[in-house]
Amino acid sequence: MANDVTKDPSPKSDIVEDIILWRRKKLAFSILSVSTSTWILLNFYGFTTITIISWIGIAVVSMVFLWGSLLRLLSKVEPELSGLEVSEEFVVETVRSCRMLMEETVRWMFRVGAESEWFVLARTVLGFWVLSRIGNLLDFHTCLFIGLVMGLTVPKLWDKYGDQIQKQLGSLKDKSKGAYNTTHEKILLMKNKLQHGREEKEKKSE
Image 1 (cartoon, rainbow, N blue to C red):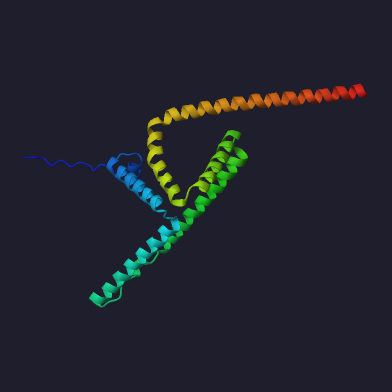
Image 2: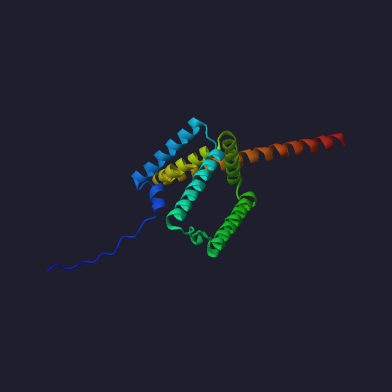
């Protein structure tokens, strides 16, 4: 007589995390391949972001019109649109999430500007400057493609080489602090020498 053995189901993993960390290699590779092919075609034919959005809007409106026309023609009833309403809970949750994101952004900006060390401030300013230059050189869908590629590569590389990267960043930060302290000491020394020279000149002139 066979005994029935019940096993606890394995916990379901997050599909987004699995794709980003390449645990589902086929799915991640498919997304990367389709995105790359789409980006190449868009740039080859010279489509802009406004053109793409307009064509998507035309396609959606046309399909909805055909669906409503066929529904009225075949079943003689009007399309049911009650399921397209946005619930109040969804609106409240969206507004709350946006407010929390804005508050956290403002706190981060003041924290970087007023409380952080010069290294963090310089790194932040440099990052914003690089983003501004990228925005001037690239269009919107290219920026989206670069963001997608970075989202599929950087987390995997960080998961694999994160410890080594943190060690290198810590070493670079220590060297930068040492160089800053040395430069600051030299500036103070030169300032003291100039001030001492002025005081001696004033005494001689008296």
